[in-house]
Length: 339
Image (cartoon, rainbow, N blue to C red; front, side, top):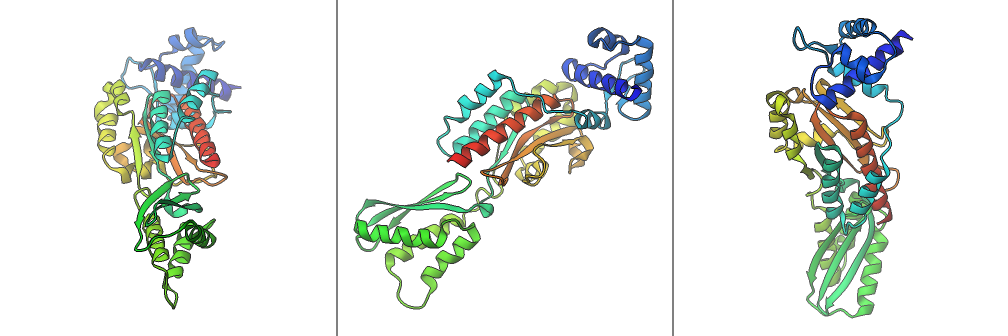
C-alpha cells in the first residue's frame, strides 16, 4: 500500500511538473490530486522518493522535480498507453489518407507527429536494403523510349527513363516486363540485384533493350539515398523550453544537423517492442543527456523497415507522446501494407 501511494505521489509530481514547468510542493499535490492523505504524509513520501533518487530538490526552498530515474519508473508503470481521442484519430486519418507516395507519407507523418506531441519529430525513410521487389512496370512513352518503374515492398517507387537503340512493340515490351518480374519479383534487393545482373552477364548475346532496362533497374536498386535518410520537423517547438536552453535545447538543435546522430537516437528498427522510450542518460550521447526519445518501428506486414519518433527535453508528456508515436507508426504501416 505504501509503495502504491508513493507511486501515486511520483505520478502526480511528474504530471504537475510537465504541466506547470515549476517544482512541485506537497501542498499543491494534496490540493490538485486528492491523494486521500495528509500533507505531512505526502511530505514523508516525497522525502522517501528523494532518498531513492526518483525526485530531487533543485533549490533549498523549492518543491521537487523528477529525475531521469523518476521518469523511468513513471513510464515503466504505465499500465496502458494512453488512448488517442476520436479527434486525434480523425486528424491522423485525414492527413495521412491523402498521401500520394512514400515521400508524401513521410512528410505528412513528420508534420503530424510534431503537431500532436509539440516536440521535434523524426521519421526515417524505409531502408532500401531490407525491401523486396513488389513489381516492375515498363511503360512505353514512345517506340524507342521506356519508363522503368520499380515498386518496393516499403512503398518506395523508383523511376528511370530508358532510351532504346531500336523501337519495341507492345509484345516485345510485355515479354521483357515478364522476364524482369520473373527473376526479381518477391526477392530482397540484394537477391533481385544478383538475378537481374545474371540476365546480362550470361554467355551469349543480350538484346540491347534487355541490357538497357536491367542497367536502369540496377541503378535504381543501388540508390542509397534512403538508407540513412530522415526527415525532421517541429524544431520550433523547442522554443517552449527556453528555461533549459543551454542544457537541453542547444545540444538538440546542434544534433538536428547531424542525421547520423538522429538515426542513432531513434535506434534500430525492430518489431520486438512497439514503443521505445529512452530517458536522459539512457541515450547514446552524453551531450544529449537532458533529452528523451520516444520511437517506434514501422513497415508493411510484421516487419519494421524503419523508425519514427519524437525527441525533446526530458520534461515531456510521456503518455501523450507514446500514444501519438504508436498511433502514427501503426497508421503508416497500414498505408504501406495496402499500397
